[in-house]
Image (cartoon, rainbow, N blue to C red; front, side, top):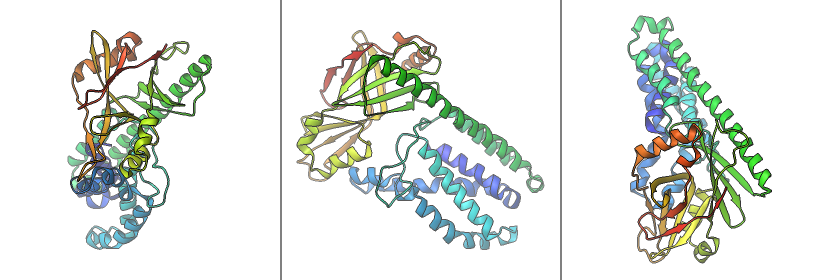
Length: 367
């Protein structure tokens, strides 16, 4: 998740484990250890794009590294905090919980986390929270603020620890609600596909930005990916309006041996589409949604994670392009209307737009 949330969760973990011993210092130590796993981002500026995709949220988020650091750091930290009567066992608990909770909430998002690195296999993701969710983060920040105003003598009485526990409990309940919402949407989507007599290979549901009320669904079918949206308030009989996107497998096959293309296909867990471009190949990972812009022709979809692969490139043959974010206010207003049931406010004559390219194609729909 975002760095603010990771730091806040680490700080709350520090309060819970070390608050009685370290007081306010536990907040700072927790925030530090809560953000350390994401220091792998420094490789973004040093490594080619394909390597960065493999490194970020990789070994630094693995269970093996968590176990190793817990063992290595327990005694040095206990020695540092000897005057505060922190035992090696409690120091080990702090390192383990601060690091592992960071990894856990990363697993909640769609990006994918290398929990089992360096062993081979797909990265783990539960797809139940958006990468930024204020409702999850706010109680953690409240716990941090309360902790900053707790007096040293009150820490020893457990005052800061109790408030941290309550706030963490609220955020945890929100996570449980997200799993319920995901399950509810999944059942409704499956019923919709069964009514249509549609077969599928796999599907995934993930929340739209900043909420767990409105969900985006992907369905993997031979040669195509279906994109649909579902609100938790939608009536069971309301059909999903599906947008159909061709995968472009035959286009990607022309570059099948390129390591960069293989990396994108691995990173996206197979939820990629490919199109020809002037540079060689245009690739998009559909798991992350799309920037949406409305005009008199309908809605333009610009995938959020996009790359171009240039086989003739001399340095980095794979270039990642950020989303062209425009009209965020309009998107949020329409999202709110769609959550409340106005389906026409969100879906209308979709067309796929390739960022930085001339690619534009009108997409068929299943209503």
